[in-house]
Length: 334
Image (cartoon, helix red, strand yellow):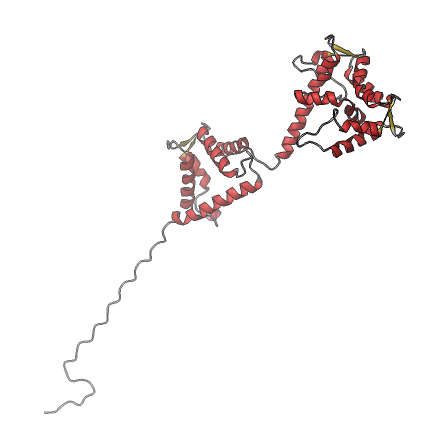
């Protein structure tokens, strides 16, 4: 399989044309579906069209081999039936390969072609002989020719292209899934908010009343709420959030309002505007929400009870003056 892929370097003009037309060159991939399973809408690869000049809807083994070996014949300038490394390296240069913005450099292309040469030079003779070049092409043809009649028909190649497209789509999905690990898309956030809302929707009418939403405040004050804010404060915080979501102020939160609120939160959280929320963005959003809540709590706390003023003490009244002489003084005698 590796040699088949590497031999594609010998037909770079066909590959380049496939790239410009947006159709990938077909690669064989094991057992293929039957001809009847091939959907007619799948486009033919460019090489099939180029070989089938008579429009018969089929490509013979001889024509396929001739087409695939065209670059080998061009590289074999001295026509000795083999290609040296020096000759093979010409594949890195025009007209076989050209510089493309953002593409591999000339040296990178040469390194790849050197590696391909080593894989094709099976006997390590320093040359790719004609038989060595033809062998993987014959194997490629065998995988296309699923009914073994020495012809590649349109249904056969369409089935292969369909299989290739499905595999490429699965690979793209896998790459996207790997990229999105730990990321949250808008739909993910909406689904999460809907699941939370469904837990509050006790009568299952698809809407959340104020009474249902108040369940998010938790239980009333008691032993089980030790360390939590007072229930009245929690209720006020919950109702502030309710009012934010209930944009039409009808006392009911419906699914369109939940979706709109999720979108608002998503846009505020997606700081780099890449349409995904990463863990750092979510953390920053949660910290900002926590700060807003902390700033809000003192305003919602009940005012502390004012102590009752102590009863005022009456100033002691002076004792009435005695009617007789001051005590301790000698009394006058008549």
